Length: 165
Image (cartoon, rainbow, N blue to C red; front, side, top):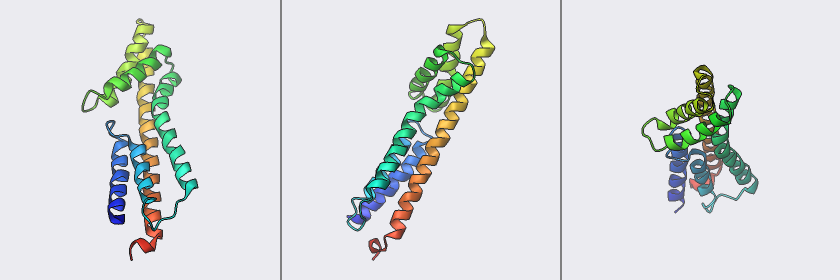
């Protein structure tokens, strides 16, 4: 049973890394569930602090995944219309394969800014660029969180020699 939990945990962590790039998979939560699987192995002692800190980091990544693109829009001069457009574009883009999740926030911010001020397409383009840069930043952050969770998974498994004997 322990081997099955280790395999499932590793697969979840690996899927989490993929999910940091693919919008259909919630990357950091899957990776955290993989780390959580370790604690159902009898030979591994529960470390509540580690689970709590990694859960906080995971939840932070989930929240920032929505906040960072909107803040990128705002930082590049976007209005509330552009911020709303970014969020709506992100949600709509999830349903448009294969690259809707990348294009959606950009188009949403652009359309939102054009609704706000249809005369200033350069401002709308600048806000949309901020949205795209924010999307890239949030994806990078999710990837880093998933890599950290992979490192924790590998560390816990490698330091518990009783699993292997």
